[in-house]
Length: 151
Image (cartoon, rainbow, N blue to C red):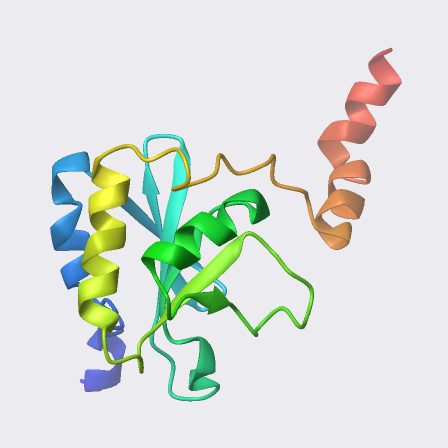
């Protein structure tokens, strides 16, 4: 038989796995996002772990926060900066860059903030929007069409 029929797709290694170990007591959940790994605790997204081969400027640990907390966090994390992936607009996402000399220590301190329940750490994600193509499909689905005829 052809071995390719039984080939198992290898999962990408978890980037910066020590971060998940550091917040393990909170039972974090992960999901792929932006080609990275989003980390959730309860109803909040708290971090994104990124380690890509291309476009390495934003590799590291992304902190989910809001603009109002940037200044106070920057005092604690001097190498923290806005991510570049979304252009020049300031967003809530800040990065502890993997190429910074204090990366691992800073990432572990950020994990300590998450474990301590620091109000500056994490955001409750907004409702997910359906893509335009998914919305069109839903509007023209046979099930929806039948439901409209019953009214």
